[in-house]
Every structure is written in structure tokens, then in C-alpha cells.
Image (cartoon, rainbow, N blue to C red; front, side, top):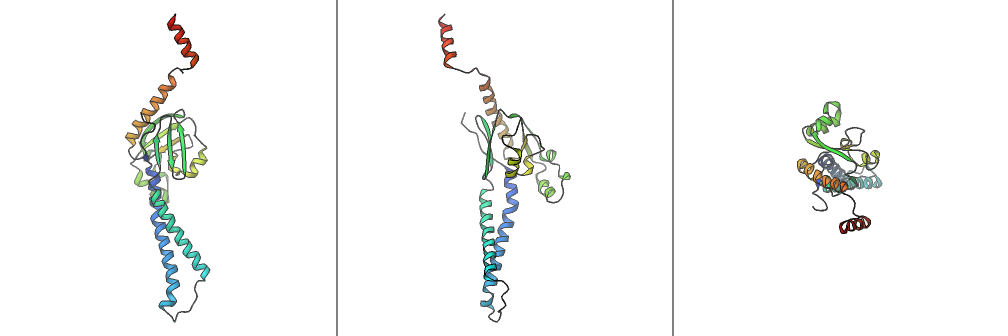
Amino acid sequence: MARGGHRYPLILYSYTLNRWWKPALWSGIFLLLLAAGLTLLPVWLPQYHSYILSDTTLLVVVGAGALAVIGAIFVALIRKTAYVRPMKTHLRLATPLFGVNISYKRIRQATCMEMQRLFPPERYKGWRRKFLTPLAGETVVVVDMTAWPISRSAMKFFLSPFFFPDRTPRLALLISGWMDFSTEMESFRGEWLEAQRRPAHTPQADLLASFSKKH
């Protein structure tokens, strides 16, 4: 089997960024147009000599607008790059700013269930409920672990709260192709578990085995 399996995009990651990059882009464009309009206003209306904003303030508005546009483009480019990938000895979870390997030794089991069972929308209010409602019927792969690969707080800094069903070491993976992912991960994990059960081959063991065969 290959060293690593397929990369399965994290829907939750792209879904989150999709909600932010367009508003950020339009906000940046608005600020740039506002700064341009205020700068060119005396040219269009020579009789208008009121200085509403200073040059420094205009530069701040232009800078904020440019940063918003650049940030929005960056987010749009990376929003589909987060993934989870089964490997020979571990599960790889990666985003553009964060990555962690989860050893199969830590994984107890992986189960599938609907998103609304883990995070009932009626439990939340405001933007959280609006965020969850479209995802309620999606299937999630829940990875149950013996312990976190790194601290939970560190993982929560880079991942959405909806990766964490509760405070126990479990990860909710909302991914594309969850059936293929489950099959592939269990195949890799099964091979790894089988390898752990085999007796280790050491030079001493091989020497004793060959000596036993001769006698």
C-alpha cells in the first residue's frame, strides 16, 4: 500500500472561510473607493474646499482597504487547502497554518453520525445557530482517541469549536467523501495494528530460529 492515502478536504474549514472572505473583500473595496472619492472630490468639485479627512487619515483608510482586499484574496485561495489524510502509521490533519499527526496508537475507533446529533442547532443562538443549520444533515466522522496529540487548547486556537463535540479527546471531521475516508483509514489502521501484533525480527531472534531449524 502507498505511503499515504488520499487527501479529504475539511468541509467545515472551507465553509467557515467562505462566510468571511467575500464580506472582507467588499469591505476593502468600499474603503478604497471611499478614499479615492474623498481624494478626487476637490477635482470634481473645485468649489469644495472642506478638508474632511487629513492625508494621514486617508492613508490609513487606503491601507486598511488594501489589507482587507489582500486578506480576502488570501483566504479565498486557502479555503480549500485544509484536509485530513490517512497515512501508514498515523492520521494527518492539516490546515494552512496548523498541522498535527494523530498516531493510530491513540485512536480507539471512528464512528459516523449526523452533525445535528453532535451539535444540535437548537442548543445555540444567533450566528452559531445560523452557521450550523445548513450543516445539520451532513455526516461527520468522529475520531475517538485515548488522548489529545497536543493540548486541546492549542488545537482550538487553530480549529473551529465545531471540531470538538465535548471536552473528551474526540474530533469531529466533516469531510468530503466520508465513506471513502472511513474505509481507507480503517485499512491503514488495520495494517498498522497487524504489524504491532507480529513478533519483532531481531538479529538474536533470527539466529536462534536458524539454530533451532538445524537441530
